Length: 317
Image 1 (cartoon, one colour):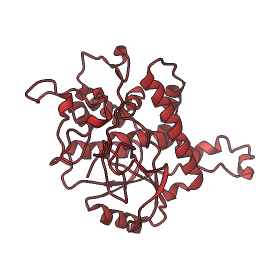
Image 2 (cartoon, rainbow, N blue to C red):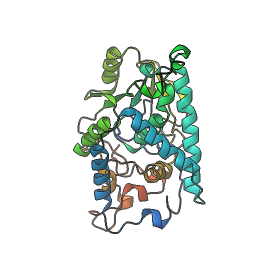
Image 3 (cartoon, rainbow, N blue to C red):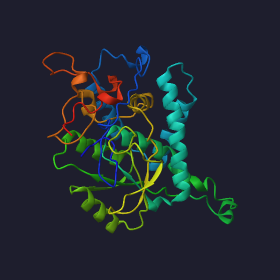
Image 4 (cartoon, helix red, strand yellow):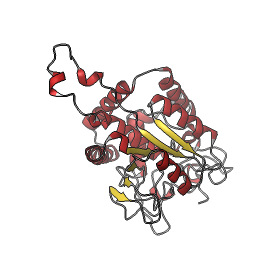
């Protein structure tokens, strides 16, 4: 089972990588110009840790979080850049927003959930959803909005928390557990954690939340068993039934990291230690393609990898 992009292919978690039948490669000179990436005074691990500390120290309401993320996203989409990766990521983000907004028209907030485990793909999806999330709130009735005392009625409404399901591996990294806990608090998530096999966890979740009809997935087309998925794909026969929503299906690895870094989104510290795909402690190690020495004990950060087909080189399965 994988950690990065929980994909329910018939429903089972798959990871960020290329299946044996695929050899898709997408490369770029770098996700950002050198001036945007070089920081010789602070290690990437410290950067990730300080970013997480920063968001924890800022107590904000869900409405404020959504507004801040939407402002960041719109600023990124308005950015004028000659970098092909940035341009491609902007197109992917716009496409993903269309899928998310379509989902918000089809389903009520209580009918939606996100498969979230702190990995980079579902983290990107979380940010995109929350940037669009206020749009899921119905405007006040005309009678209430006409009242002279009803200033900013829409901003006074309670925004429902985004429901999430986290199916933990049997041997989770503590760094991942900590990051999930931190982001659950920061982003006001209504998260249910299960340390159960996939089907059993899903059955339990839907028993507890029978109103859930659709689940946002951080699945990418380069993930195993995901090459034939669509933006809206029902679960396979024999699995708990709901609609899988896949807004980041066609994103490439470098675009995931371009989005995270352009929007300055805190991420799990393991990515700063050379891990490019996260599973459990027994089947995951730093990516050898990111090794800095022959001994393989020093690694570049995950965002310096550029090839889709090298993403899972640190995974045993």
